[in-house]
Image 1: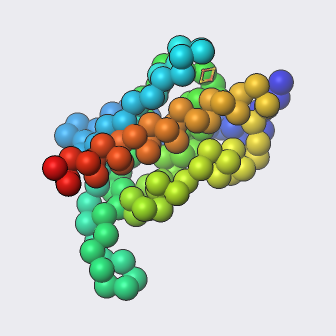
Image 2 (image 1 turned 45 degrees about the vertical axis):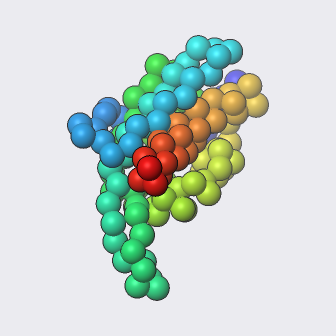
Length: 133
Ligand code: FES
């Protein structure tokens, strides 16, 4: 099993690792098979989009994980991709977007890419539900 240089770089030097005090949203996902756990913290702010409409976007994002090397690398890459995206754009991110960005993952490790994306989407959905209530 071999990892791309980009995966190794993100694993050895994870970006945006840690937590956010007073995060606007927190999403947590676990993989029942391997037992790994992922937490995503979001700071959400408002801005005008290019149509002049208000939109909410991810101003800052951090992750914490008790996970494998692939889960750490995927989450690090995901936080770089997600920072600055509108919530709609972030909800449209798929695991394949991150796997492609990383130059692929060994087949037995592709499931690890789900944890980060699922935790991100869970955080956004929880945030949106809270706003509506
Ligand atoms: Fe559990 Fe990778 S082995 S997330």
